[in-house]
Image (tube, rainbow, N blue to C red; front, side, top):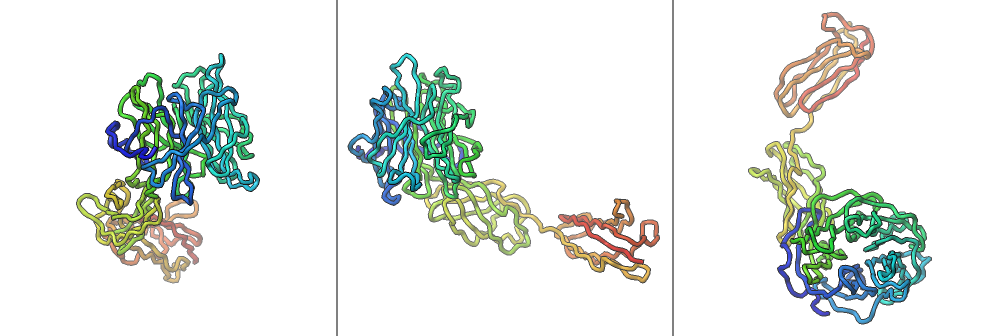
Length: 492
């Protein structure tokens, strides 16, 4: 099986919808009836092992095989069968395989744990059940048990070891119980004993889905991929979309757009697998695809950066230099450049430092830059780029105000002084109120130019020209980007 994905095929569109991040097709190879199930790194992360099922499309048969690669472009088939469900409950259909590494000492040397959804479709009443397998070396697997999850239909079980030590198992099942693909939904069950037993099944999301996959991003975020729809006749293009969890797989939020899609209603995704690619910063997706009567395994790569946010996202035109952080995904090991422009004016970027594949630090010099919104563009070393509109705002700084002698005796000629500086012209008002909110004195109310203002004095008089009574007063100071409340005490 050398050269598993060795040739390019113009079977698909060259780019997919905009998402975080988008995948682009690289190549495809006729797969007869193979479907990718899981990709697991080994040999210290320098190589990858692909597990795939073989059998009647779009479902696997009852055997899992494997292939290895050092670049994720060329795969070599390994001899032998990794897992077979033959003879277990009369299974003749395999609805997907998922695995994970569990470091718990209680598992001895069996740290690789796998789950398979299987069924016997020759029985009068079909039903899927979850099988559990274990391995010490990724190669030799032994069946352990039938776990306590069963359903009328089940596909692509995907385990995730969460930060609290519990195991989350995601899978597709039939919410309607009638075998209608339009009723396939994403469900989950949890286990507190390393997958020996699971709690009750619950629906995670209401999206129609045929297959799911999970990947853990840098920083501990978890992405849930799903494909939809699947129809035996092919009535709509099939798309892979996603949810993201920043809490380690406890809560998932929908991501907009499409990561990858087929181009016609006759092309459908079967199971698929996603892994961090040999480019380190990119992601590679391998998908089983049916186009008409032909089956393929397609390879797609996320090789373009995806910019999400800039922090802080406001700088001032008075700043000589500001350090910022660009967050996103798929930032290459050498970032070519980051630009900041509003179309007619570009802010000088003094330096760029890649923190990781999801973060880059850069320094801008916005002094005297025109006010307004700017687009930030990151360009990877392969020339691929991502532009984030309205990512950075150049503004004028907040105004400042300081009060001097806020405890004073008007009858002795003492006053209270307010020093104000603003960086944009506008209206400036200072008003004094009693603690009950009753107006006492309009100290100042006028249009001002930008800059340091002449000192504003309150001698303790009221609007009526009388001296204010002894007590506590509040003075509001409002101007261009200035809104403060000062306490003043008058003593007679």
